Amino acid sequence: TLPEATFMQEFLAEFVDDASLVFRGVQQSATAKQAEGRRGDTVYVAGLDWALSYDFTVLSIVNVNTRELVYLDRYNGVEYGMQRQRIKTACDKFGVSALVAESNSMGKPNNDELRRMGLPVRDFNTTNATKAEIIESLAAAFEQGNIRILPDPVLISELQAYELERLPSGMVRYSAPAGMHDDCVMSLALAWQGAISTQRRRATAKEY
Image 1 (cartoon, rainbow, N blue to C red):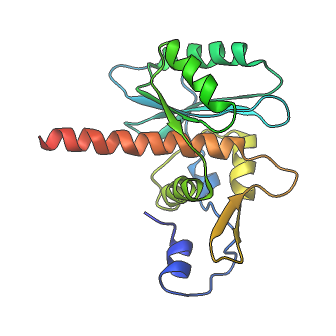
Image 2 (image 1 turned 90 degrees about the vertical axis):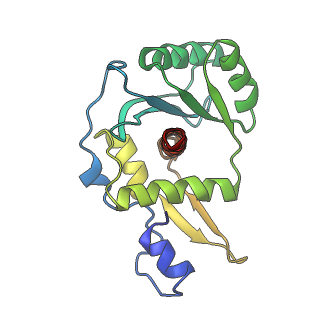
Protein backbone atom coordinates (compact mmCIF):
# COMPACT_ATOMS: atom_id res chain seq x y z
CA THR A 1 0.00 0.00 0.00
CA LEU A 2 3.03 2.31 0.22
CA PRO A 3 5.17 3.65 -2.62
CA GLU A 4 8.41 1.67 -2.87
CA ALA A 5 10.63 4.64 -1.98
CA THR A 6 8.60 5.35 1.17
CA PHE A 7 8.74 1.70 2.23
CA MET A 8 12.50 1.56 1.68
CA GLN A 9 13.05 4.66 3.79
CA GLU A 10 10.55 4.02 6.57
CA PHE A 11 10.92 0.26 7.04
CA LEU A 12 14.31 -0.67 5.56
CA ALA A 13 16.12 2.51 6.62
CA GLU A 14 17.69 2.81 3.17
CA PHE A 15 18.78 6.00 1.46
CA VAL A 16 16.74 6.70 -1.66
CA ASP A 17 17.97 9.02 -4.39
CA ASP A 18 15.34 11.57 -5.52
CA ALA A 19 13.34 10.70 -2.41
CA SER A 20 11.50 14.02 -2.65
CA LEU A 21 9.82 12.84 -5.86
CA VAL A 22 6.39 11.54 -4.84
CA PHE A 23 4.68 10.31 -8.02
CA ARG A 24 6.41 8.00 -10.49
CA GLY A 25 5.02 6.75 -13.79
CA VAL A 26 2.69 9.71 -14.24
CA GLN A 27 3.22 10.22 -17.97
CA GLN A 28 2.84 6.51 -18.69
CA SER A 29 -0.49 6.50 -16.84
CA ALA A 30 -1.94 9.44 -18.81
CA THR A 31 -3.90 7.35 -21.31
CA ALA A 32 -7.48 7.71 -20.10
CA LYS A 33 -10.18 9.45 -22.14
CA GLN A 34 -12.70 12.01 -20.96
CA ALA A 35 -16.26 10.73 -20.65
CA GLU A 36 -19.47 12.73 -20.99
CA GLY A 37 -21.48 10.82 -18.42
CA ARG A 38 -22.39 7.48 -16.91
CA ARG A 39 -22.18 4.34 -19.02
CA GLY A 40 -24.27 1.30 -18.15
CA ASP A 41 -23.90 0.04 -14.60
CA THR A 42 -20.43 1.58 -14.15
CA VAL A 43 -19.73 2.95 -10.66
CA TYR A 44 -18.23 6.43 -10.35
CA VAL A 45 -16.86 8.35 -7.38
CA ALA A 46 -15.65 11.94 -7.18
CA GLY A 47 -13.07 13.94 -5.25
CA LEU A 48 -13.46 17.64 -4.55
CA ASP A 49 -10.91 20.22 -3.42
CA TRP A 50 -12.55 23.58 -2.60
CA ALA A 51 -11.15 27.06 -3.33
CA LEU A 52 -12.43 30.51 -4.23
CA SER A 53 -9.86 32.99 -5.52
CA TYR A 54 -6.11 32.24 -5.39
CA ASP A 55 -6.29 28.44 -5.45
CA PHE A 56 -8.52 26.39 -7.73
CA THR A 57 -11.61 24.32 -7.03
CA VAL A 58 -11.07 20.94 -8.71
CA LEU A 59 -13.56 18.12 -9.22
CA SER A 60 -12.21 14.72 -10.29
CA ILE A 61 -14.45 11.78 -11.22
CA VAL A 62 -13.04 8.25 -11.31
CA ASN A 63 -14.50 5.14 -12.94
CA VAL A 64 -14.28 2.59 -10.12
CA ASN A 65 -14.62 -0.39 -12.47
CA THR A 66 -11.63 0.55 -14.66
CA ARG A 67 -9.74 2.77 -12.16
CA GLU A 68 -9.60 5.64 -14.63
CA LEU A 69 -9.93 9.38 -14.16
CA VAL A 70 -12.66 10.21 -16.68
CA TYR A 71 -13.61 13.80 -15.77
CA LEU A 72 -11.66 16.80 -14.48
CA ASP A 73 -13.01 20.30 -13.88
CA ARG A 74 -10.78 23.12 -12.58
CA TYR A 75 -11.61 26.79 -12.06
CA ASN A 76 -11.32 29.74 -9.69
CA GLY A 77 -12.95 33.12 -9.16
CA VAL A 78 -16.44 31.54 -9.17
CA GLU A 79 -18.74 32.25 -6.22
CA TYR A 80 -19.73 29.25 -4.13
CA GLY A 81 -23.37 29.10 -5.19
CA MET A 82 -22.38 28.74 -8.83
CA GLN A 83 -19.65 26.26 -7.90
CA ARG A 84 -22.13 24.02 -6.10
CA GLN A 85 -24.48 23.98 -9.09
CA ARG A 86 -21.60 23.20 -11.44
CA ILE A 87 -20.47 20.35 -9.17
CA LYS A 88 -23.99 18.93 -8.88
CA THR A 89 -24.49 19.01 -12.66
CA ALA A 90 -21.28 17.03 -13.24
CA CYS A 91 -21.95 14.53 -10.45
CA ASP A 92 -25.52 13.95 -11.66
CA LYS A 93 -24.27 13.18 -15.18
CA PHE A 94 -22.17 10.36 -13.81
CA GLY A 95 -24.51 9.30 -11.03
CA VAL A 96 -21.61 9.33 -8.56
CA SER A 97 -22.04 6.96 -5.63
CA ALA A 98 -19.79 9.07 -3.39
CA LEU A 99 -18.31 12.56 -3.43
CA VAL A 100 -15.29 12.78 -1.12
CA ALA A 101 -14.90 16.49 -0.39
CA GLU A 102 -12.47 18.41 1.77
CA SER A 103 -14.30 19.78 4.81
CA ASN A 104 -11.68 22.22 6.13
CA SER A 105 -12.53 25.92 6.39
CA MET A 106 -15.36 26.77 3.97
CA GLY A 107 -15.54 23.16 2.83
CA LYS A 108 -17.93 22.02 5.59
CA PRO A 109 -20.76 24.52 4.96
CA ASN A 110 -20.44 23.98 1.21
CA ASN A 111 -20.51 20.22 1.72
CA ASP A 112 -23.66 20.60 3.81
CA GLU A 113 -25.29 22.56 0.99
CA LEU A 114 -24.32 19.88 -1.53
CA ARG A 115 -25.92 17.25 0.73
CA ARG A 116 -29.11 19.32 0.80
CA MET A 117 -28.94 19.32 -2.99
CA GLY A 118 -28.99 15.52 -2.92
CA LEU A 119 -25.32 14.65 -3.46
CA PRO A 120 -23.71 11.74 -1.51
CA VAL A 121 -20.99 13.82 0.15
CA ARG A 122 -18.37 12.30 2.44
CA ASP A 123 -16.49 14.91 4.48
CA PHE A 124 -12.71 14.64 4.50
CA ASN A 125 -10.80 16.57 7.16
CA THR A 126 -7.33 17.29 5.82
CA THR A 127 -4.53 17.09 8.38
CA ASN A 128 -0.86 16.29 7.86
CA ALA A 129 -1.59 12.65 8.75
CA THR A 130 -4.73 12.17 6.63
CA LYS A 131 -3.09 13.98 3.71
CA ALA A 132 -0.07 11.67 3.90
CA GLU A 133 -2.35 8.64 3.89
CA ILE A 134 -4.24 9.53 0.70
CA ILE A 135 -1.15 10.87 -1.10
CA GLU A 136 0.82 7.69 -0.37
CA SER A 137 -2.11 5.57 -1.53
CA LEU A 138 -2.28 7.51 -4.80
CA ALA A 139 1.50 7.33 -5.26
CA ALA A 140 1.40 3.55 -4.82
CA ALA A 141 -1.38 3.33 -7.42
CA PHE A 142 0.79 5.12 -9.98
CA GLU A 143 3.86 3.07 -9.14
CA GLN A 144 1.97 -0.22 -9.44
CA GLY A 145 0.12 0.79 -12.61
CA ASN A 146 -3.29 0.62 -10.94
CA ILE A 147 -4.59 3.98 -12.12
CA ARG A 148 -4.95 5.81 -15.43
CA ILE A 149 -5.45 9.55 -15.71
CA LEU A 150 -6.42 12.07 -18.34
CA PRO A 151 -3.53 13.63 -20.31
CA ASP A 152 -4.31 17.02 -18.79
CA PRO A 153 -1.16 19.20 -18.77
CA VAL A 154 -1.99 20.99 -15.50
CA LEU A 155 -2.71 17.73 -13.67
CA ILE A 156 0.45 16.10 -15.02
CA SER A 157 2.65 19.07 -14.10
CA GLU A 158 1.24 19.17 -10.56
CA LEU A 159 1.82 15.45 -10.06
CA GLN A 160 5.36 15.54 -11.44
CA ALA A 161 6.33 18.55 -9.32
CA TYR A 162 4.80 17.31 -6.05
CA GLU A 163 7.30 17.05 -3.20
CA LEU A 164 7.99 15.24 0.04
CA GLU A 165 9.76 17.09 2.85
CA ARG A 166 11.19 15.46 5.95
CA LEU A 167 10.35 17.55 9.04
CA PRO A 168 12.64 17.90 12.10
CA SER A 169 10.11 15.83 14.05
CA GLY A 170 10.70 12.90 11.71
CA MET A 171 7.30 13.23 10.08
CA VAL A 172 6.89 13.95 6.39
CA ARG A 173 4.99 16.75 4.69
CA TYR A 174 3.60 16.55 1.17
CA SER A 175 3.09 19.74 -0.81
CA ALA A 176 3.52 21.57 -4.09
CA PRO A 177 6.74 23.53 -4.65
CA ALA A 178 6.62 27.23 -3.80
CA GLY A 179 4.57 29.16 -6.32
CA MET A 180 2.72 26.09 -7.62
CA HIS A 181 -0.70 24.60 -6.87
CA ASP A 182 -1.67 21.13 -5.69
CA ASP A 183 -5.45 21.36 -6.14
CA CYS A 184 -5.56 18.75 -8.93
CA VAL A 185 -3.38 16.40 -6.88
CA MET A 186 -5.62 16.68 -3.82
CA SER A 187 -8.83 16.28 -5.82
CA LEU A 188 -7.48 13.15 -7.53
CA ALA A 189 -6.20 11.74 -4.22
CA LEU A 190 -9.65 12.23 -2.66
CA ALA A 191 -11.34 10.56 -5.64
CA TRP A 192 -8.90 7.65 -5.49
CA GLN A 193 -9.57 7.29 -1.77
CA GLY A 194 -13.28 7.09 -2.55
CA ALA A 195 -12.66 4.55 -5.32
CA ILE A 196 -10.63 2.11 -3.23
CA SER A 197 -13.07 2.46 -0.30
CA THR A 198 -15.96 1.64 -2.65
CA GLN A 199 -14.09 -1.39 -4.03
CA ARG A 200 -13.43 -2.69 -0.51
CA ARG A 201 -17.09 -2.35 0.46
CA ARG A 202 -18.23 -4.13 -2.70
CA ALA A 203 -15.73 -6.95 -2.10
CA THR A 204 -16.91 -7.31 1.51
CA ALA A 205 -20.56 -7.37 0.40
CA LYS A 206 -19.83 -10.20 -2.05
CA GLU A 207 -18.32 -12.28 0.75
CA TYR A 208 -21.70 -12.23 2.49
